[in-house]
Length: 146
Image (cartoon, rainbow, N blue to C red; front, side):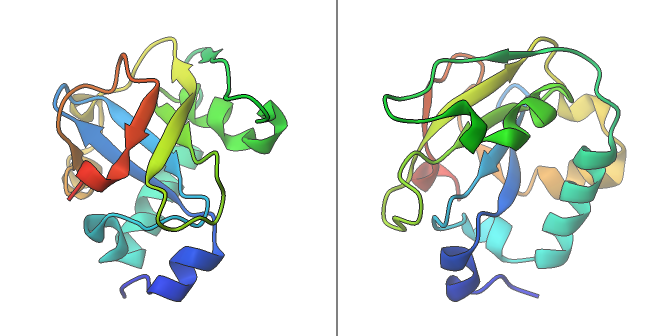
């Protein structure tokens, strides 16, 4: 089932993508517009969410400096995802749908790659693809993700 516009606007939805190097991103939507590849299937998103939340933590997370006025306690899931190998991004201007800018909140000490995932999970994840590499990004404009 598709995630409709109202649900996207009303919720802070955790979603996932991969980049050109196979690294994995976690994005907390903050009420922003989801890429169509994410919005297309609530079931696929839930399966990815369940997989990454139940995956054992395998390393430490490097917390990064947040934008002025942002509070680390506002992003409690960021370290959890980074400890599982994902780069974690959050929206600084919550519930401003038209703002497609996100900021890195935590980086993994040991990044997880698509090659490390079960085939089925990798196939779901690769439907949402970021051109370029996430490794050195401090900001992310999700409007470039199909």
